[in-house]
Image (cartoon, rainbow, N blue to C red; front, side, top):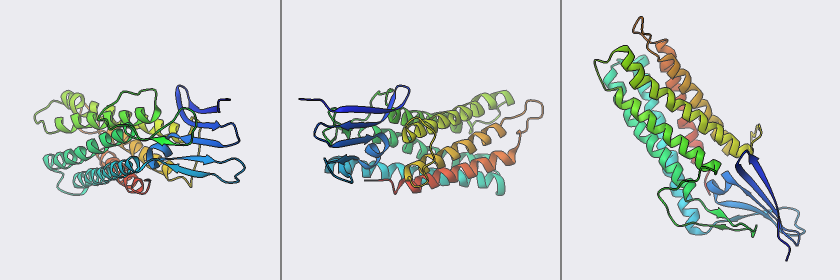
Length: 280
């Protein structure tokens, strides 16, 4: 019996799309983001002009819906709280403890969203190796190590970024720090977290564009990745502007730091709202 012809697409070691041409004329297409977000793959029967989508079983679909809902809402709320903290810093009292408290609570929501995003990848339906046109729901796991999967690496780096941000947010409650200590304990983890967010966003583009540059204005998934990456860029601008000058003890630019945080946080909230619509 002839084996299906398989065509793999992606970037480097990552496979983001698989196409099987099965003997007899049918074609099956698996795409990483669509499978893990919507629990579907495309199947075109022999002689058919248009394909159809095959869904995972009810257990897998229900799992994806619940995880997507929790993750999306966590980013919506977390982004809103970060925006509120930046607004207090820019327009309100500017009280350092109040701002740090708002940011810290928002950071907890980001931690939750990051980890649940990783859980969604770990427990998403998997394709079968022979192109049979079906997805299999794996057993539930709280953790896995799959660095050769771009979706896993994207979610893991995002989660790691939220944890590094948590270090910065905790250290921001410390008082009586020297300029050098502020830059080392608060600013440095903030910048590292921003870098991890940017890397995660890049991996998101690799996954959805299959390793090439693409502009997909009709793709909801593409817009979610793009808006999240915009938020990461704005957070990085904010972090750079928040460096404390050793000579003066003041920030490079407090206005840019606050506005970058506010607009970046709103971008993450918007991406969370869009994510609510990207479900099975």
